[in-house]
Each structure stands twice: as C-alpha cells, then as structure tokens.
Length: 367
Image (cartoon, rainbow, N blue to C red; front, side):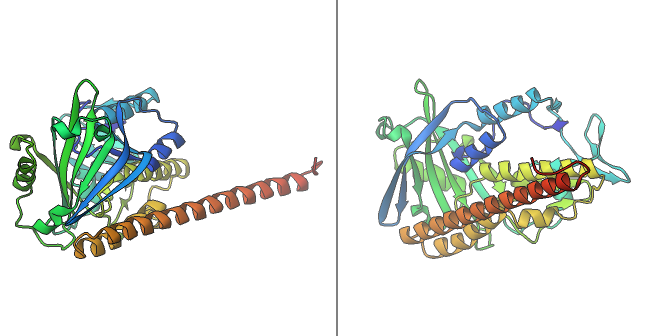
C-alpha cells in the first residue's frame, strides 16, 4: 500500500537531472519511464573569473519531475501496488505487532513502514527526532528560453554557475533546458548547501530573481518555489522497529545536491530489508543503519560532503571542482568494483556449497 498526500501528476521541486547511474538502476529494476527528457551533451561551469565546458554525448538527461514521478507511480500500480492519493499521514504509532499510520480519514495497520516522505516527512520525524540546525535549500522556477538559449546546441547544454559563491551562496545556480520542442522551457534555480552550519542573511529568492533579471530574464517571484534538504549524516538513525527510511528522508550530498540516484538506490535497500523482515519475522531492522552506512551510496555521499567543504571554502575553483568530482567518481567506481567482486564471490560460494551438497547426497556425484 502506497500513501501519498498529493494527487499525481503533481509538482515536485527538483532540477530534474537523471544521471547515468540512476538510469542504470532503473534498468536493473526493469523499470521503463517512457517520458520526454532532454539529453545533455555539454555542461558549462562558470566560476569567478573563469569558465569550463565539459562535452560528452548523453552526459545526463533532464526530466519534468511531474511526468517522471507519475510514470514511476503508474509502473508500481501495474506491478500490483495499491495506491491511496490525497492521504496525509499525521502520526505514526508503534504497537506490539504493527505500526499504526494515522490519517484524517482512517488508520492503517502495517507490518512495515518505508518512509520515503522527504526531508520533513512525518516518518523521518518519527525516526530522526533531532533536526539539523540549518537545512540545505533549493529554489527553482521555469521560464521561457532567452534568445541565446534557442539554438540546438544550447537546448542540450546545462549550465552550473558558481559565481554566486562571491555573494555568499555555498552552492550554485543552474539553467537546465527542459520542455518539448514545441514548448521549450528552462528550469532555473539556486542550491545553497549551508555547509557553514549558520543561517544565511542572503534572501535566496530575491537573489535568484535579481540575478536572472541582470541577464534579461524576467521571473515571477511568486513562482519561485523552495524545498529543504538534509545532508546525509551517518550518525543519524535510518530505522526503528518496523520502520525504515529511504531517499531524501535519509539525506543527500551537499556538493551538487543530486538526489534521484540516491532515492533509487536507498529505495532498493529499503525494499530488500522489508522483504527480509517479512520472510524472517524479524522486524527490528537492527542492521539497516549499518547497511546504509557501508553502502556505495552513503560512502559516495560522504566523499562528496568532504569535497564540498573544501570546494566552497576555496571560493569554488575549477581545479577543486574537478578534484572533488574526480575523487568521488573514482571512489564510487572503486566501490562498485569491490561490490561486484564480493557479489560474484558470494555466488561462487553458494555454487560450491550446492555442488558439495549434491556430491554428498545419496546417489550424488559430479555429472
């Protein structure tokens, strides 16, 4: 049973960048999201006094989250998941053999609750009682493309603007082409990581609107929407008896704030933990936090967090960004290789055990 306080398709504040790892995870799950997307073949990085362009065919793609998320929901329904929309969970209550999920209309009784309800969701607040003093934040809006953004090349180019660091933003502004050929749009926003741990006096909404206006782009301030995010904290719990967290409820990395692949990967881990609990009857989830901390995703997020602190403290230098991204990518590749070797070693061990059992069985032997 899936409960969601919205009705799909619904607006989801997000730049909409789907990186290659996210697409590989979708393929692994045999999930096809047949929605319109804009392929990115070039990424422009703007720094104070410098710029840099990286080119690679299909570097990543941009989706409209309303369409993307609706397609995921429809796939879940096709698999047999029951969905209740316009249902807001107001309180969770643990009893001896279940979790009671209270809503304004009725109470649901669940053996396992997976909290994928975001940074400020009720499930996260039930599990993680201590809140960070300052959250990361992202603001975004959609505008028509400027004249310089109408060419075919520009329609497949993403811009990451770190010049905002000189104004006190510990993050970047972005311009991501989206929409259709008939109705092109640009997703524009600003991401502030709050890595210093102190509240910023900068009004991000005004800053974004003013910076766009300086480029001749008029944005309706009332249409600039914001959403909080939390950095992944390995000391914060990700589970409680009969409850596990996934996605933004666990946290994201503060370098670029990419969250879709994290949501998919931790969602798969939560699903496997729930499957084991239902199979064994052990609903303590006592090992789930360790599984998250030792996962490829969590370790990569921690590497990016350390890199982000150096990057933003160094006034967003190009060399530091390349080092940060390169180190985290290399570390992620190393972890993937190690995990792959461990997986094949585990399969080889199982095969050897099966062959041994077959050999020792009456009438057995090698054939």
